[in-house]
Length: 163
Image (tube, rainbow, N blue to C red; front, side, top):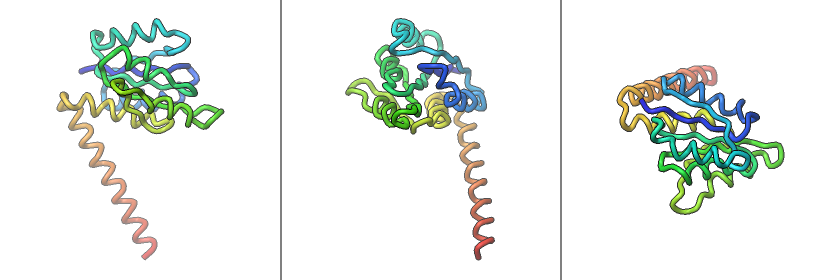
């Protein structure tokens, strides 16, 4: 099975990123976690991205706040799918990071999830890997069925209460 890299621009992003790590582990996806900055460790970030495919990665999740250049910097050095997590900062509540992550130039795609949307970033990475991994596809299908069951139980409870 391919691995997923989870990279954060700063260790202060860890509380957000842990949701992605835990979700990947729940699906049995091997994960490697790093702190690499597009601005403070640009050489190391570029080297990581350039070697990621050869090192067995199938996708990269990059989380950063404020200028949030990390996902774009990683995408510039690999053709692997890159998923950006804009992290909420104290200044603009993550809007700055969202705009920085989503506004990539043509030819440099970065899939972007919601501000602090680490769980969805991990699920998207699992879906990408599941294109060629039947076991992951089955786990995703079962999770969707379970989500449906939970909502239908809540629907029945609420409907009964207010009828």
